[in-house]
Image 1 (cartoon, rainbow, N blue to C red):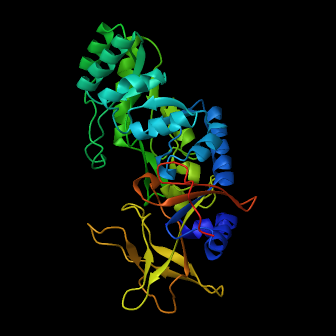
Image 2 (image 1 turned 90 degrees about the horizontal axis):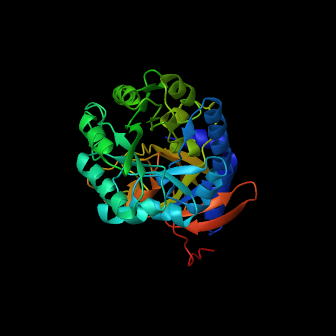
Image 3 (image 1 turned 180 degrees about the vertical axis):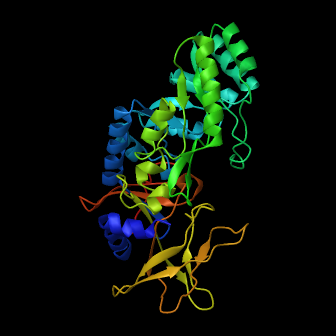
Amino acid sequence: MFLDVALERNPQLCELAIELHQTGLIPPDTYLLDIDAISANAEAIASTSAEHGITPWFITKQFGRNPLIAQAIAKHIPSCTVVDFHEYRRMRSAGIKVANIGHLVQMPPRLLANALQGQPETVTVSSLEMLHEVGRVCEENGTKQGVLLKIRSDDSEVYPGQEGGFRTVAEACSFIDQSSYLSCAGVTGFPSVLFKQEQGNPVLTKTAHLVKEAHTDLCERYGKKLILNLPSHSSVATTPMLAEFGATHSEPGHALTGTTPQHAVDYSLPEIPAYVYVSEIAQTGVYTSVYGGGFYPRGQIDKALFVSSDGTRTKRALVEPTIGNIDYYRIVRDGSGLHIGDTALMAFRSQIFVTRSLVAVVSPSQRKILGFYDSQGLLETEVNYG
């Protein structure tokens, strides 16, 4: 999905990845994160957000909750949203300010007390029962917490496994108003922006309009401006549209690595591709295949650049796997002329946190590896591939 744009817009990263693999310094099934490009992308998003009065909270799951990358982003975007309790622990240990917990995954009640000790700006809740749990923990701690009410997605836009949220907020507000330990900070919903291939640009979703309606009602109820957080496809390009719509907050994720769907077709966007995936030919014969481990069902992986030991380069299509496969290998459609050990360079839409891949943080400007990590952001201390 992103191979061509990565080769054109970030050739330094691509060449470094090939060199590191062919000299044995990284194994197959390794993501390389370009800290230089990600820092520049974060700076561009932060600058545009400031110009339009938007507060961005960055997301880390797609690059494997990597602490080194998160710290680089935080120099420009100080606060993050954590999508689950694992990510909360990782970001806290990395010294990153956590602004929002509970979105996309609700915080387990038994972990709430610890999470709230970190004083997040907001807690996203998607049900009345969870609201009660947050209130209970705050009462036990003697603290007050702002909550974001998650508005249920339009049925035509909800992703499987991400259902949930309020259709109406009246009952939730009544409970908040009766509590001395809760306050309504605002509303959120997902997805609020989607890229429309046929139009060639991102658009606000039906869900965004549902969230905006709830926000208008709540601002009238409480007589003040509340948070209107509209995550999904948050980038330099979508920030003016969000601001015009009335959003106060966004959640840049894939824009930080230049890998939103829009980046695959528009090479003029400020953010440049900032990661690649490296594998190698694992089998030849009847089925020529590359090692897997880092593939993601929604990654839209269409092809790879293969580089032999003598420098010969060729792009080949990859075969889409059947549902239910285990990510051991990915078949090459035409394996003629390829040999075991040949480098396979790919770039696609990743969610590194759901893989078993190794992650190498690199600086192409310094031509060096800054550290090896696992897919959950833990430092790998026993890596020796060279």
